[in-house]
Length: 256
Image (cartoon, rainbow, N blue to C red; front, side, top):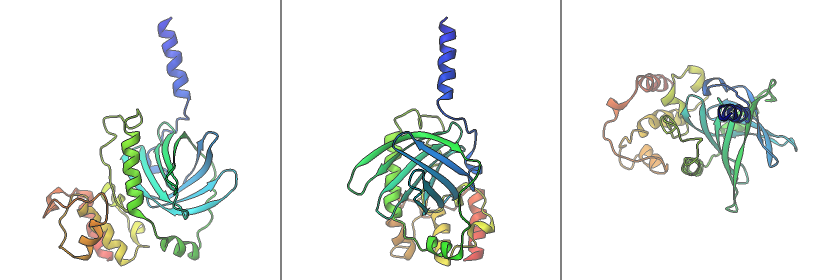
């Protein structure tokens, strides 16, 4: 009898979330419904690791956002973005189980805890991007430091729960505007829309993640000292670079 009850409990628990059985590599270009019960429902389309498009379920309000993405493991990401009114969202999404946990940080200091489910939609509502859309999105100013701090707070708060309490949960956390440069091989299509300054930051972020000590007072030194996640600790980080990072550095330099 006890075994039967235990089995029933496991079955009910497994039904609590829609099993997506997806990895972070195949979420881009797809639309997902994020349902936070009676509080909020939004549709998110992940354009890339640095961009998304969202539609609010009831009002139909929509926007494209620049985002920061931290890859927790092969099926889980932590993303954050700041809206025009300075509201910051940070969402911990598990694309295997369909769970999402996160926080909404209001400008007035109020924090709303978010818990909900993720489901894959069969048709994306992402409009065809026009040149004007791309220029507008590219020129959007993002408070990267604010978002990074928000994500760090989310890791700290959610980290005590079962969601992040796994052997690989805190491995491979990658900070910065372009985390993909350290996590996968880049294609030319990933960087061809970036200007010289953006490429320079992308390339140097790879070194900065290992605590590379930049030239004192230089542009990169000043830039990274203003990033909350950066700690200067190594004169030469070249031996620490992965093969993926080395190849990405070569590709980025060819376009700078």
